Image (cartoon, helix red, strand yellow):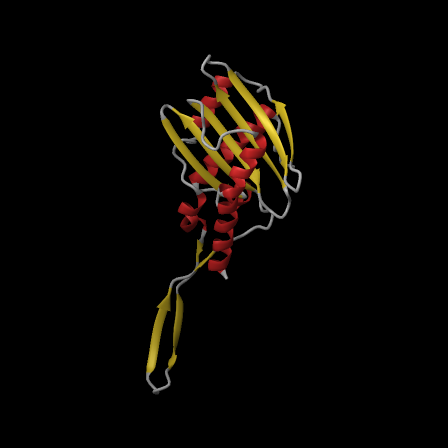
Length: 204
């Protein structure tokens, strides 16, 4: 059961990272690749809903910062709502805080699944086999917690001539379960910057 749950989490994240992102970008009329030297995109999606949203922040060739929030409704006739965002703090300060939270270095969630398991005691299996011979075997096991809220975040970032992309499923939930995992800490820091500076994706 644990293996199935992990695979489902990886697959749901891969869906957001793959074809759906290209379809969303096409509807939003933005390129698939980051076209500015300093840019970050965060896609939120997942679950059974046809709704997704995208936060975009970049600095253009004239050193002017722009931030936008897109809401995307998929369907036979996709709808897009776009609005400009203005951060509370200076834009360059905000972007550097993304970098400070290791946006250029974070791995994707599938790379740290082993950290999101709680180790159980060694299982001892002993008895008599079909030939009447005694046996004793030992097995290591672990428990993996899951959530059904299905919130998936896919991040793309470019800065200092470097690019990175990564995705996390329900990072707020997993940080509560595994507060010692630094990758979850930094992913949630990135989301918290967006929530506090731009007043979007607020949690209850």
